[in-house]
Amino acid sequence: MKPYVLSLGAGLLVGVIYSLLNVRSPAPPLVALVGLLGILVGEQIIPVGKQLLNGTAFSAACDKTQATRHVLGQLPGRHASEEAPERERT
Image (cartoon, rainbow, N blue to C red; front, top):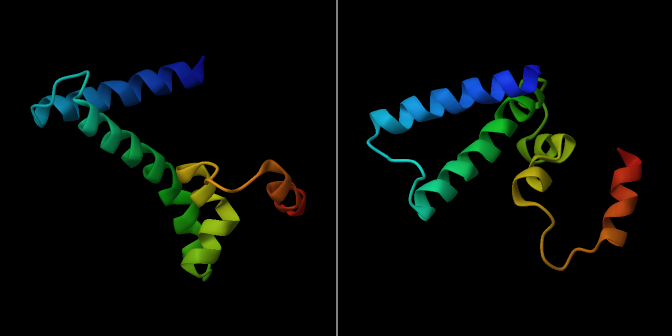
């Protein structure tokens, strides 16, 4: 139940921000896609930031938290068989 309440709260907050910016929902496709990108990047700020505060380099912090994979998904040309050894190491 908690994830649903948190999701509703986040949605209400975004709705208020949309209202303040005079953007109507559903947003135009480009605005919606930029918003989704912001959500994906925003999810990674805290984990990557924690790694950076521990003295980890930015690229290593992104690798440790799998931020790039989370934001970009599986990149073209990469196959599941190539990713299997990476998953086993983490």
